[in-house]
Image 1 (cartoon, rainbow, N blue to C red):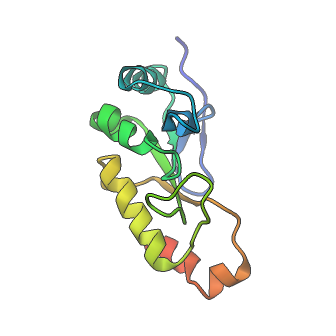
Image 2: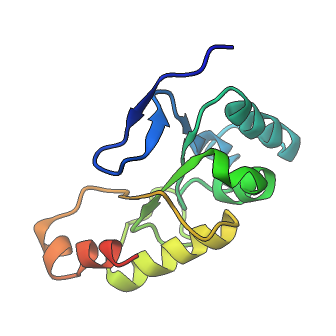
Image 3: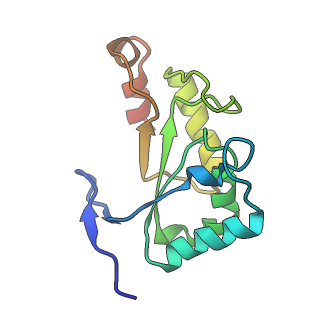
Length: 146
């Protein structure tokens, strides 16, 4: 198989494949398709075996982060990992997002534990933020301090 093309991700200097993997469908039922642990393991390893090196997930995606940690944490040097902040750990899908410094930190720390890693290559705000959230709730400062 030919190597997948790569591009630099913004100003990060990270070279990521132009095809990434969005892990939302690993969330499982009831909001996503039913997926067994064996299927998740096969999918995640197939993604890396195919040369895809960018994986995007979120606390909001149910079991997605836990499955990534369980099945490909041992391959961490092979991929760039992106997750979201502002999600409330343990909240239902579609729940309100809270972009306070405390919630951003708690969410990222939970993501790190679940994915069995000590760093994320990219942290994204999961919802559009208002100026109030950026300035008064300290969302931007909290994310930059991670």
